[in-house]
Length: 173
Image (cartoon, rainbow, N blue to C red):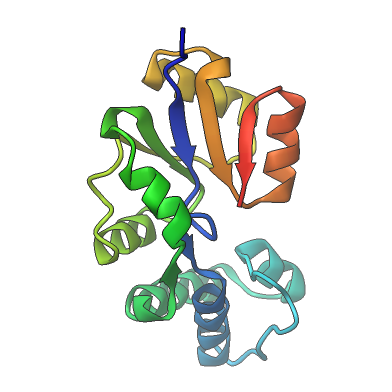
């Protein structure tokens, strides 16, 4: 008897390639608050910025995040879709698909709408992806399934390895 697979898709650099726009957005924000750009990093994160510029105060952090998010949402044309993974998504029943991401909610909605894939998911689960075991337990509850039925599409090697340790079916992108 064939098991009824349930699919979990990551957003950034799995469904949609966002590194370039993400980095451009952070550098735009840094420049606007008077700080030098960060280069030679695959993907700039808040953590990267705040470690690089330890003296940024709370107001500057808020302004930086606001500027970064605005720039990102206004320049979605710089991103591009992973056609192969999106085709896999389109071939599935919506009830079997969950988007699991750590991205900002407004950015998630903007990307999904821009690429017209917002209606392809049963649920959008936004977490920090730190407590993976807890997140996976939540995903199983949402899908009403066993761990063995889950199929993950993910680009983050650390998360892929962690899921591998949990004996989950992970397709690295």
